[in-house]
Length: 123
Image (tube, rainbow, N blue to C red):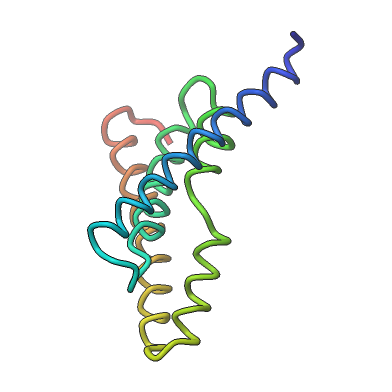
């Protein structure tokens, strides 16, 4: 099998695994916390921001970053959830969710980068 086909296959399999885990986390979060706030999307996107920095330096990068992290995190669902919250009875919750999400993504990515530089001296 040629290298290009292997890369597409790696991204596809990684994406499927990431999306499956995201769906499981969504169902679990709804079961535990209810559906009033999108806890699962917030969690997977913050975790995904940390993971993508950490996994960007490992073998099988296409599988892990484009595939798994791409399937695991979701900007489209996040956008929909912000819109639904904004249109609901508590539009301020949409603003809070937006701010916490963006800051959480940046802080998670920065924290992992800091740990990697501290441990390995790599950038």
